Structures are given as structure tokens and as C-alpha cells.
Amino acid sequence: MTKFGTQKLQLVRVTLVSSIYHFFLDLVSKRGYFLQEHDLESFDYDQELVASVANKTFPDVILKTNHDSPLFPGGEFIEFKNTQSYSIASFNSTIPTGYKPFGTLSKKRKEHLRLSGFDSHDDEMRSVYYLIRGRIPDAKPFPVSKVCLVHGSFFETISASELVKWSFQQILSEFSTLDLDQAVLTRPPSKKTLLNRAAWLHRQCELDFE
Amino acid sequence: MTEVDSKANVLRQNFYPMIRDNTLSLFIPLGSDEVTTTNDKLVPINQLQESISPLNSLLEACNSYPDVLVENHILVGTIRHRVDNSHWFVAQASFDIDQPSFHIDQAVKREDTVEGGDSE
Image (cartoon, rainbow over all chains, first blue to last red; front, side, top):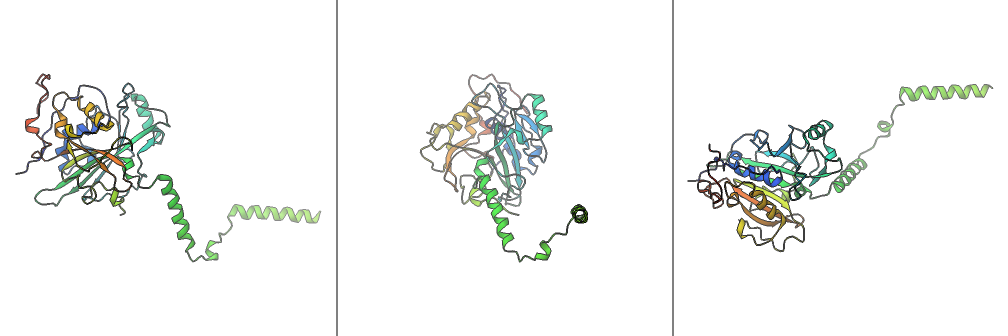
């Protein structure tokens, strides 16, 4: 009979280093949790690894930095994606990418990280990871789940610049196929425009009479 | 609802068969000069012959946990991305404690570690 690992490995860390590898090992020690229905936000992450947590703001988790460890610089951004299937919805709120500059964070969040000593320059690039859990709740005899902690460049099947270019081309292409109605495209002059035009006409009239 | 490119969907069995049900996996990109072979298979951590930086970092991170040989719970390997053929390092732990990579009830204690850590 198959048993599932709801037990903990009881890992006790001895060094105060944080990185995506340490985060992964923390998840390994608690992986039985992923079979349950809870959301990823309420997971019992090792708070010693985490510098910042935010709900519904990119990224969900920012790991602590380690200024004295060249092997583990830390500071990775982690975004959660939880699905009730093995499909992954497209990244609507942000273009998936392997790296993002620290400066993309909100002013409030940067201030929080500055106060706790885990900030950096705005142009410093941080690695981005996606923690994806796909779950089939009605699988027999038990629900099944796959959890992947994936570097964001895995989803860069098209570069961000190419994606933006492609999007504009798409918009232009769709626009060019519209059956344009000149009457609709003609915008009525605004009140300010009318007043300016009236003032200009008034000045022209005055000049004519001089 | 639109979906990510199916060839970049790590949950898809047909493209990434090594990502099995009830597993937790880590994906790290590799430099093109870092790996010579990828066979899309995951093996116990001491059987991966390649010397690659993510594996070394993972082993180093494992040393931060002296109570248990956590690496005994992890399979590793290198795979190719199905879109651009780039090389990726994968580490995986199973939720199923009957799987070879999960001997939680017989976790190997390091000899030089004093017992008496947390217990629940």
C-alpha cells in the first residue's frame, strides 16, 4: 500500500544562508503538505530563509541575500502558481522571465527590504523562480500532484522584446483589417480646441479691420 | 483562459515524463558548456557523473542540514528543454515514501552528528 510523506524530515539548519537551494530543501522536508488542498501562500516556509512575503503582488516571496557568500548570493524572487489541473495558465500579470531588476519592486517593499538589510541597487538583477503546483483532486484512488520550482527562463519561449513587438504587430494587423468608417474616426473638437479656434478667428478679424 | 506553450509546461507528461505524479522538482538552467550529455533520466545524487555547478551548490546546501543525509531523498539529472533544446538541471523528491528516493522512516543519520534534535 502506498503511503504518503506527511511526516517531516526534521531538518535543522546550521548555517544562516538563504538561497533557492535551501528553499528547495525546506520544501523537500515538508513535501507531504503539497498533497493537501491548502494554497501555496499558507505553506509553513522556513521564515529564516525569507526576507519578504506579499500577497497578490509580484513576487510572492523574496529570499534573503547573503553578502558574504559568493556561492549563494540569495535574494531570489519566487512567484506562486497553483492550478487544479496539469495546465499552466499564461502569466497574465507579468511576462515570465528568468531575471528581473530589483528596481521593479514597489517603493514600499524596497523600503521594507532596506530596513531589514536585504536591499540592493535598483539595477541589480535578481533570479526569478516560479513555484508551480498542479493538482488533480479527483484522481483515483487519491488526488495526485506535481510541484515544480522552476527558473523563469524556462518559460521564456519567446523573449520579452519579441513578445512586445509581436503584440504590437498583432494590434496593427487587427486594426488594418477593420472596415474603417471615417465618420467614426473623426473626433469632434474639444471645448478647448473650439475656444482656441474662436480666439484665432477673432484675432484674424481684428487684423483684417486694421 | 490561455495556457503557456505546452512544450514549456513542466507538468505535461508527454513532454517531461521524468516529472512524475506526487513529486517536487527543482529546475535550474545550465550553461551550454556545463553538460555533455542529457538523457532525461533522474538518478540518485551520487550517480550523476557530470560535475555541474547546480549539483555542487545543491550538495553544499545539503551540508547546511547535518542531522539527516537529505541528499538520499533526492534524484538528480539533466534534461533538455523541449522548445529550444537548452540544458537544465533537475532535482526531484518523491512524496511517496515507498519510492527509493524517500526513506523517511530510515533516514540515515550522519555519524558525526549528536542526536537529540527536534522531534514531533
